[in-house]
Image (cartoon, rainbow, N blue to C red; front, side):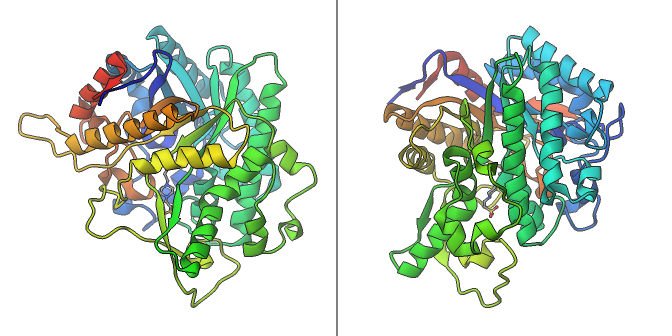
Length: 457
Ligand code: GBH
């Protein structure tokens, strides 16, 4: 059965600054927490760092040429805070703004609509040294920085995403220690989550207060969650997992409240000194769109928590384990593949939040082996299959009344996959990191055809 997307549906591809730019010491860029973390022995597989990455800072014209060939309607990139404010505060570094001027102007020259993420995890190290996202002041610093880049680029960039995946910045960064800054704390992580959301709210208010009227949203990584059995213990564990991965972020942003379950699981949130009167109204202010990153669903089993460390906020601490179904194919990340999960997630959002704003899928894709064949080609049929089935599920959700306006493939290029380094490849374009040679994969041609015809078969 063939599926048709309308002409105004936005087809894009996404990247993030630290994952592709490199040039970490150029033109006055400051140090970010990911520079520090990736240079910490043992933090990243293979000791990889983003020092060079895809060298996109220098090669962006070639990368935009690839986007033009792909026929993208839109390109989602992120702005590196330490290029703009090397120490996280004060006047803008002109050379940093210049880079994004060149990037945006060149995208527009090529008929590609830019979509800017203001924060995709590269916090200036100076702010981390002052407490990072544990510190309420960082939310104010973020809003200042957001206003600065929006004042400069808002005449040409009309879609803005405040934060990418505050779950990862808070829980993976401050509770699990798998991401920068590598902390393993409890309250620190919940305070970080709150201050990230508050930073989003302050930034939203700051951008809305200017004369330039743009579309403003936030991107959350969300998962449909289901228990592995009807056992009440598994059902309760699935509820706690839903809390940690979704509700902790969707409830404040889409309903201006913290979930009841948070109080049951973590104690009276009102006792948490970091939440002040008025914060939730700021965080829950109306959005123009919600960005959703979807990779796979959570199938949850209860696990006895033998060593409860109630001060931490990880999946283990809430007694929930993600179960990978036996015998089914996994991506190179070890992640399950469940395209219908994207449809379930769309319906969960629509059913849970009245007044839900329009949705953009701001990331979706998979890591594959991507073997380079002797003729130099890369025949990533498994990626094509992943994209085809997920877009089919998305079209079904649209047909069933979920207002989804666009889809961004993760990612345009192979890039620095955070704690996994360069070994994991998500790109529609292969990058040989030795030579920086770009080679479009079979999925590139497949996506080009989809964008051109708007038709899936
Ligand atoms: C995104 O993160 C990032 O935005 C992007 O930069 C990255 O390259 C891309 O995905 C691919 O990884 O095991 O408890 O963390 C996705 C992060 C990974 C968060 C899976 C949720 C599952 C639950 N997501 N994770 S947990």
